[in-house]
Amino acid sequence: MDDEIAELTKQEGWHAEGRAARVHYEGAERRFAIEYYARTEHVLYWRVPEDGATAAPVARASVPTPLRKRVRRDLETAGVDPELERTEI
Image (cartoon, rainbow, N blue to C red; front, side):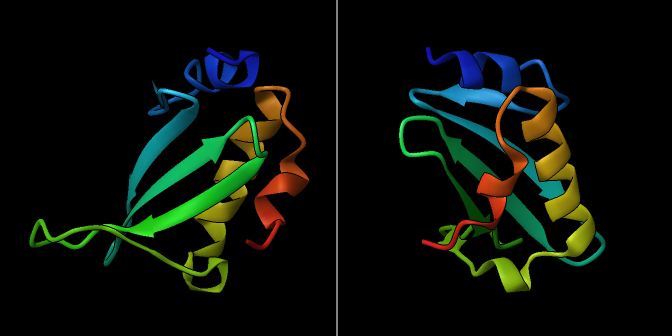
């Protein structure tokens, strides 16, 4: 496991899945899964439908600002450059 992934799993809600770390977030109206890939240094956001349908990737612009701030804070605490959260894919 990459050091960054191990450090992220110490943050609330994060867990390791292979070479990625994932956390789930449920807001007032939407559910998201957030993944950080250490090897490529990317953060991906997925919208998780309430009905159990397959999650779909979403653009950062559709993710609530408080959630994006939390992800950046978690990355920084884990020793990862928080600016990676802003990298477009």
